[in-house]
Image (tube, rainbow, N blue to C red; front, top):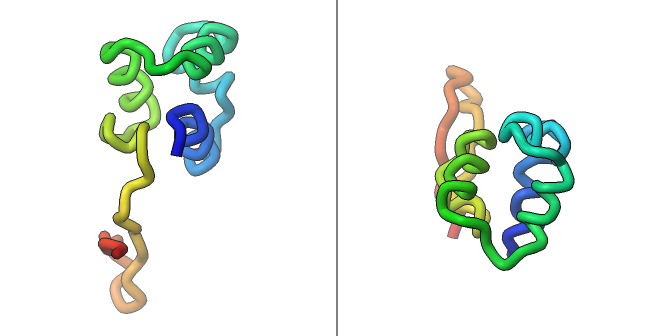
Length: 83
């Protein structure tokens, strides 16, 4: 999965637009689009994007193989590793 597609997917999962993400990063949406169109932004930018999306930086590059479900008995969240 490409970096830009993954960022879009994470935004959808969190119910925010790329414009809202740009606002959280305190940059213009045009700057965010330019960043996402490039190969890869600087590490500092990646860290800021990951923090804004509340994910580990590695999640910006590939979808994790871990899913979170709710326990049918107690309702607590359970992390499930997918093969």
